[in-house]
Length: 400
Image (cartoon, rainbow, N blue to C red; front, side, top):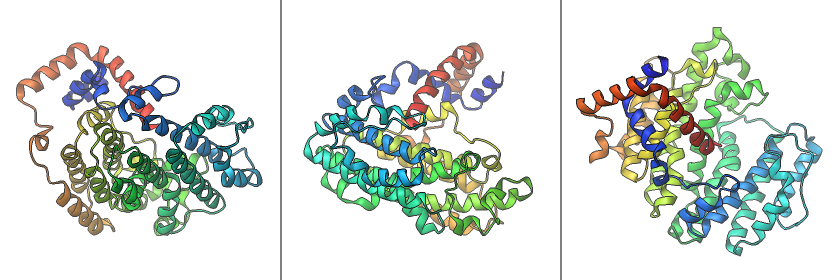
């Protein structure tokens, strides 16, 4: 009955879950091969799809080394610095990792072989990004994120460079104009917005695993130690700190909208837009929410599918952004220290995202539709639980 109540409150989720399950996902996301993921991306992105897949696998291998706490720093740091060179060493692999994704290191000869078969223009992009990312990861292994500038720098190394690399691949393929790959500031913001959202949302998980990514410059105004924010007696200060970081992340939204407005290829647009709308929805769920310090805050599965199905053009994305910044605006406490800054950035986003056309009323459903949706939920909620499970697998695949 809990599931039924949840869906009765959001009947649009039912429609999109059914549409997603019945094949609607094919219109908005690549159909990935269960092993390599190559075939769907190839169809959607033409020849650049293979390069995107290899780029992902190479960075996944690099990230696995960074995350593996069993590798000592005297081994890990040189590995991160030299990792880009392993792409040109046919036999290199690493068999000592204990991470869950260690297969990408154990099978690295296969990945590097595929990399060397790419066009030189793609090889150069991937190798360059891999080199810069490895150096940046090594830098932050040996120091914590102190200032907001360093927070931006860390997020640039681990996510902004991904946005820059993908943008360069899209332009090199001629699916997108040269400016998409040349404007590294906008591409960097695409990555920073996603990474900051993940860091904000994953506060408790990172604390439990001994990791700290919130900038000291911000959290030190609210607590003596970052871990103190999870203490019940500090919850009010913790939420204020949370709100300040979310406000910081929102400053990337104008760049995100500008970047997306330049994209011409439908598959590239979907590929880039879906994570961004997921991020704004996640920030709206986290804003002023004590649960961030008590457990996991996630958007609903049906909500995620709705976002995936809707975010197929720039006007739709602007409407989504408008919707969620309005949701944040309605939750701004008058006593919050960051309230003025939050209101200012929301005003800027509003100015870029004013809804127009049919997407402005994307959540206004007729009484007949609502009645039918609720009846459908009442009659088939058990079946839909299976549907939501399937949708969750697709969504989790996208998140990973």
